[in-house]
Length: 364
Length: 69
Image (cartoon, rainbow over all chains, first blue to last red; front, side, top):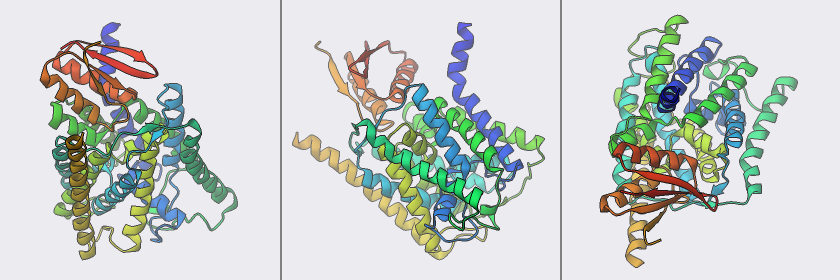
């Protein structure tokens, strides 16, 4: 019995990953775009489009999975007492880092979880992105080990937690209004990836389940590489492996495994895939978690993570409105420029917040 | 208590573990104060990996990890 309990505890993240992998494949079977069962970059982009922050008519939808993850995580955080209102650790910088996550993510066309889904669906171009994650995580760690620090967050009064709750509550109401009254706003794509989606209630329910799993298993992919580099600890990376196995097997069963050099809703520029995901990983380690973890922490009432989420919405708006985001056609010249500016800003933030701690230490 | 107290309350992941790693390299016993369950899990997993004995207790709503080293 004790052995079972220990094995369960040691492999919770692996089991969580397998379920998330299977969930993703099912969501694709039920209508989500290919290899996009869950994608925190794509879904934030679609929500940004739905709200009118970006007007690309192909990628606008108020993804119910994200709202489902909200309810799941929020309940899980409450039940397991991980609900801990806090904030005040450089929220402005976190907003900016959130934007940089989207710059990288929309050059690659996905978050780390989608990179695995793409691989598990047979899209070999995802390899560039998968290799980019450890590269970005390594860059972030170079600065973390030199004292990079955005400052400690402080406990907040409980009532302030109403802010993220109200924000996602309004999104849920908007989704309901759209479905019942067929209002023009929020915007929903009529064609393109934004128009491909699983039935709303199923998306909500499976999102809720994913939320509980993410919250309980502490699944974190940038964290997985970070722990390997720092401590030679492979625990969190088991989640990575779990998603790959779960999605691959489920895709095989559902007839969704289609090996190709470049899969659907993706491009084959390996350098852009590598560097895009590298920027996402770099910014994620500077933030203390990948786009998924920022969402989970938001619902554990971390207002700093909420600032990062808002930054991601803003980043998606900017990338699409200025025509910087990649598409299956590839990466534009301006897209490359955005990526270069993104790296410059990420290095600048990392450097400045190393100096800040060094100065504080020297002055003390 | 004469032991060093490492206050990791409010620090983003993985800074609490990094601070513990730094402190561990000094070799003396110390205590860590953290206020997030995930930080407790990361730190205890790290200490477990290193084979360092520790004890976790509650103190004023935060978690106190005593590292015997």
